[in-house]
Image 1: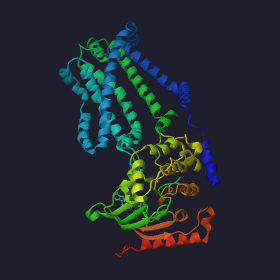
Image 2: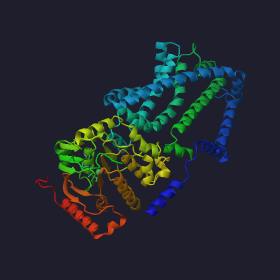
Image 3: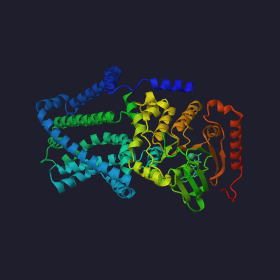
Image 4: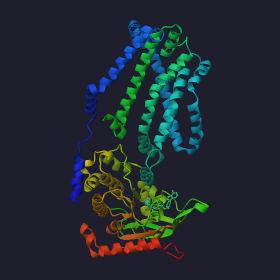
Length: 284
Length: 289
Ligand SMILES: Nc1ncnc2c1ncn2[C@@H]1O[C@H](COP(=O)(O)OP(=O)(O)OP(=O)(O)O)[C@@H](O)[C@H]1O
Ligand SMILES: [Mg+2]
C-alpha cells in the first residue's frame, strides 16, 4: 500500500508539461542554435551559387538572381496585388472544399447508406486529374472567380474527407462502449467523443490541402489567361513573353505563400492539439 | 451516498433467464452463452471467473445492453437492460481505462454526469414503479471520490500524463460517480502489475463500501475473485455456461492479511477445482438451472 502511494507520488511530482509561452520560447531558442539552421543555410548557399552559374552560362534556362530581385523591387505592388488575388481564391476555395468535406465526413460516419453512396463518387473524383477539369470549367463559367474556387475546392475536398472520416471512426472500442452504456445521444457522442478524436486527422489533412489550395488556384488561373489576374495569370503571360525573371519572381512569391499557409495550420494545430501525443513529440 | 440498491429488495438487481447468445450462422455458429440463468441481489459483489472464451464479456455486454440476447431475458431491476441503460442505471469499467486524452482527470470523471440528462427522470420513474419509492441520489462529490483513490493532486492532469494504475483509478471513479445501480467491470485490473492491482482492489472495496452498488466483476484471477466477492460465478466454455455459483463467507472488510488465512485458501482451492472440472468435462445435456 505505502509502496504504491510512494510510486504514485513520484509520478505526480514529475514536472508538468511546460506552459505554451515557455514552450514557444524553447522552440525559438532551439531554432537559433547553429546546429539547426546551419545545414539548411549551407545548402541554400550552394544552390544559389549553382543557380547563378547556370544563369550566366544558359540565361534561357534560369534568370540571374539579381534580375529576380530587381523585378520584385521595381514593382512590389504588382506582385502583392496579384498574390492577394490568388490567395483569396485559394482561401475561399479552401473554405468551401473543407466545409463540404467536413459535413460529408460527419454524414458518412453517421449513416452507412450515405457512406456507400458517397465514397465511390469521392474516390473517382480523387483519381480524376482535376487539373484537367479547369479548362472545361473556364468554358462553363468564364473568366470570373468561379472556376478557380471550384478547382481549388475539388482538390482540397478529398484529403479532408478521407482523413476526417477515418478520424471520426478512430474512437477506441472501450471508449465507445463506456459512452454507449450511459446512452450518450448521437450528437453527444459526436461532439464530446468523435470530433475530438478526429481533430488530429483533420489537421493532418489540412497540412496537405492548405498548400494544395494554391496549386488549385494557380492552375485554374493558368487555364483562363488574358482576362484574369493572379500570379498564375502573371506566370503564363510572362512565360509566353520570355520574361523568365517575372516567372521566377512569381514562383518565389507563391512558394512563400505556401509556406505561410503551412505555418498557419501548424500553429493552429499546436493550439488545438496540445494534448495530442504526436504534437507533443513534434515539439521536442 | 445512498443509491437505489442500498436496502434489500425483492426485485433482483440482475436477472438472466435462459439467456442465449449465438455468434455467426449455420455451420460456423458459436454458442457464446447457452441458456444462462442467474439472479443477483442488489448490493452484492459478484465475480465471474472462467477460462478465456467462455462468454464472460458477452454476459457483461448483455447486461450493459450493448447487445441483445438471441433468446431468454435479461433484466436489470425489473426492467430490460436497454431501459436500465437509458436511465443511466448501469456503469461500465472496461479493461482499458478508456479516458478521453484531451480532458483532465476532473473533466473526464465529470463529463458522464452531463451526458444523457433525460436519464434522471427515467431513473426516478423506474425506481418509483419498480421499487415503489422515489429516489433522489445527491450529486456525487467527484472531488472527494478522486481524493479517496489518491488522485486529488492529479485532477488537473491529462490521462497520458498518468500511470496505468492512476488512469484505471480515474476510470473507476468515473463509473462510481454515476452512482449506478449496477456496475460492470470487465477485467479492469488485468493490465496492471501485482502491487498496483492489490492497492486498486482495496480502493475498489472502499468505494463500494461507500457507494453500495451491485457489482459484476469479470476476472481471471482466483485470488482477486475470492478477495473481492460475496459470490463467485464459475463459467465454462463450448458452449458458454455457468457451472457453479459459490458464496464467499469471509468477513469484511477484507484486508491484505485476510488473503493468508486458511479459509481464504480453502475458497481459492475450491474455485480452482471447479474451474478445472469445468475445463475437463464438456457440456452435458443436463439441466443446469
Ligand atoms: N462479436 C463477436 N463475433 C463473433 N464471435 C464472438 C464475438 N464476441 C465474442 N465472440 C465469441 O464468443 C465467445 C465468448 O467470447 P467472450 O469475449 O465473451 O469470452 P470471455 O470469456 O470474455 O473471454 P476472455 O477471458 O478471453 O475475455 C468466444 O469464443 C468469442 O470468440
Ligand atoms: Mg472478455
